Structure formats: structure tokens, C-alpha cells
Length: 485
Image: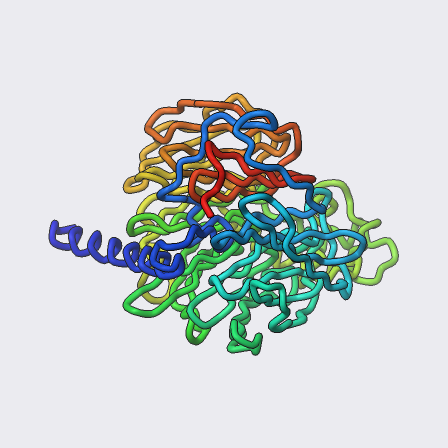
């Protein structure tokens, strides 16, 4: 490519990144209020630019306060002196507001679920993180729908929604644009994208996402040429939609069949990573062969009891889209095609264009060190990943060069929380309760392994000099001094 073309391309990418930063600054009230306003903070970045939390902390070290919490996997959402969370207990879906300085519960609001959606062993009906714009806080429960409260706890509106069809439950979190609440509703049947007016909860638009199966990612807001786009990582594709209309604008192929990590923005690039055990497996066996050998009642369908060992039994609940206990030919063929196209990858994508831009807008790709659940972190020109087993990887954000890859950080176990960063440090939380602190840089340097002795599934929040870590039963605030009020 001619040098002038490269310069124009980089300038366009930086303009997009600057637009996202401008949007974040506006959300933060021009920097006058400490905020972590949604899942992974400003713009979903996982970065607190002006914060500097401690390296070493624990139940007896640099503890500002500790509060007992009801069960739930949502992450802290912060605006000023208010901290918001959700919980599920005694068949109640709860929204909590805490005093950030002391951990006291200021108010608690509850709604009963219509029907609690199916969840896996580790998931919870309170897995979605609240989002706030400083005036209202919006929460999503798969078993209820959307709810909006004022900072005083007054309910402003509610929007009941159908319970998602997936055995893992819902964990996507809402994001707020200037006027709308945006929610990804990817599931095994009826996937769609929903936008409601954040003032009254009325539906602004609904866009079907046919072909996208269950997904658990939170979307990314990106501003292009004065218009907002919503970037969604889903089955096989990264897709951008016009926020004003819900119209699909561009997409990139190359993701796995099921997405948990959320996309993140860097200078001129969007990073999306995904891994599933189903990617790269051979195509499912012939449906005709299965029926001939295993359809014992000869009804032309395959029940769970009839499914033989192997892919048919292993993936039965996934393939059975409507969860009626049988797999039809249409369900089988749909998943066979999806499995055949599934790819595990970390993609660096230049946002923009129209239609399928895979061949023109993928700047680089990596295939190792990929996470199942934790989202990528782009910090100080590097992209960080962490995967089960406590294996960390780091890539140059501009060209994908591996700086270190699948190196052990000395904290074994599974990883569900996403990495966050502040003060030149990267924080990684294992499920079994160890928060590892890395020095941001080109080589792996573990500064601390802080043992909380409580399981961690939620992603931490960072404001000022304090990191807030939710465990299965507590919320910890760790800092070198009390949070400023």
C-alpha cells in the first residue's frame, strides 16, 4: 500500500478512537466525577486512566472496607459516591445501591422473576452489570427484563422481556448511548438486538440477529463520522449496527460458534477474542446415519436418550435450540454448518466500511492464548489475554507481534473475570480467589499474587486509588487511602 494510503488509514483509525474517547469523557461529566459506569468501566475498556490502586492487598492489607453481599455475578457500576450491583436471593431479583466510601447499602429494590432462566453451575440470574449515566441506573435480568431507577431508588420504568432460551442464562450487560438503552439478546432461538428509550423504556427499534446463537458478550459503542455504531461479537462474526436505526453496517468473519468475551477498543482498532471447544471440530455426523442407527421410536427425530456418545450427546442441549428434548433435522443442519465455520481467534479489526469487510479490515490475527470467558484488555499499546490455567499473553496492539504468550502467572484455576488496568498495572482474577498484579510491559512481570480466599467470578471496578472486587459473598474495597468523596 502506498505510504499516503497507510497514513490516511491510520489517521482514520485514530479519529475513530478519539471519537470513542470523546464519548467517554462526556459520559464522565468532563472528568469531574469518579465513574466506572458500566461493565468494564468507561467505554467497556477495563482501564481507569487516572487511578493508581495498590499492588499488595487482601483481607488484612490495604482494606478500605468489606461488605457482605447476596449471591450474584454482576460487576460494580460506579458514579461518584454511589456503587450499584445486582443480586438474587429468596426468589427475588435485587438491585442494590451502596455508599462507595463505606460499603453501606443505601437502598435495595426487588422484583420477582416470572420464570428463572436455565443457568449453569456457576452462572446466576444476577449476572448482568448495571449501567448508569449519572441520573439513572439501568439493570437487566434475564428472568425479568429491563428496569430503570433514579439515584434515590425510585423506579422510573420497567420493560418486561421474554426469558432467553439458553441453558446458561443471560450475562450480557446493557450499555447506554445518548438517548437509548442497548441490549444484545443472543440466544438459541430468536436472537435480536434491542434499543429502548432510556427516559421511558419504550422500544425504539428491534433488529433480528438470525443465525446468531447464544452469546454472552456486552456490546461496544463506537462513534464514526458523527454517528454512533454498536459493535457486537457473536456467533462466527463481529458485527456493527447503526445506533439510530438498528441497521447492520459492517461485519467481519472469523469468530467461534459461541462468544463470551466482549470486544474492546484500542487506538484505531477493535479487538475481539473467542475460544470454544466446538471450534475446529470435524463436522457433525450425518443426521440420516444417526436416525438409521439410533431413532429407536422411529419418529424421525433424535431424543436425548437416543443420542449416542460423541458429538450428538456432547452437544445435544446446544443443538436442541428450542429445548424441547428432541433434535430435528433443521436444528442439526444449522449447528453442523456453524461448527464447520467456527474459528478460535483474536482479531484486530479496523472499524468501518460497508458489508462484509473481512478481507479488507482485519489488521492482524492470533490463534494462541485465547480466553473462553475473559475479555481482551488493550492498555498502553498492548493487548492482554488470560485463559484458564493462569496463562497470560500479551501482543503489540498495532501489529499483533507476540510479546509473551501463554506464560504462567503462578495462579492456577479457571478465569471468568476480565482483566482490568490502572497505574501501569494489570489485574487478573482467578475463580479460586487470587488477584495477580502484573507490571504493564513487554515481558511478564508478576508484582503480586493477592489471595482473597473467596471465589471470584465478577470483573473488578477501579476508580481513584481503589479497586473494588466482588467475590461470591462479599464486596472488597482495596486502596492506599479512603476513596475521595
